[in-house]
Image (cartoon, rainbow, N blue to C red; front, top):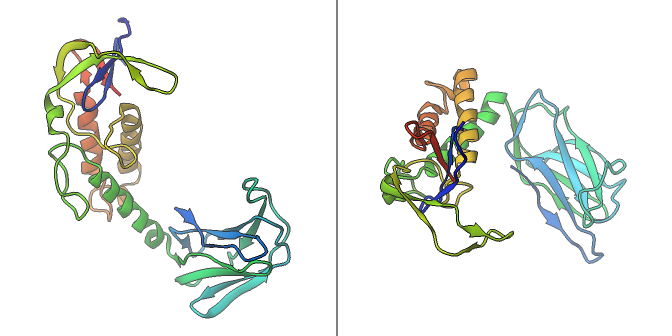
Length: 264
């Protein structure tokens, strides 16, 4: 096995190794100072699955009443039981609402009345494919909008290519950094240009990380292979091209002739 060498790439900020290698709720704070939020699965609930919501409160709400409503019609009501635990010091009381007996397709919301009045965001109950199909489509759209380089996919929030000079990027040895990650000193060039184009921006910003990209692309490739009806060719959210886009970037980061993997 060869020696280990770390390098950093300007622009794409990559390093190299040599030798191989949605839940939310609306809150309310009345004059007594108590505040609360109702957490629901905003993706939705399959009709036949277990359905739970959680009330987070800054003070005890045991005995407060709740209602699950479709529009103005209450389809399930009850009282909050004992706290099931603590979310944080600010919200030491958490209450579970089980409404698994609500199975009709539709759009719902939950309200709690008592020491504090609070309402959840709306959510859907429907078939599994309907509920999760939208999430897969949204995930695919996110990856497509995060594409770096010339092979971007135009959309209302993505109108131009990015980091085109990564096609001929210079590599550098890792600079000195303190415990906070602040660099010091000058970069030392390795004198090696590589094609670091492509890949996805990470977490909605403009950096690319090989470690997270490799894990993510492994998940996408596995999904296309293991769940072709949901993620493969002909499905409502075909990840085939997107998984290949990620794999192509990873292959460009590997120099087989020198056994060097470039990474951030």
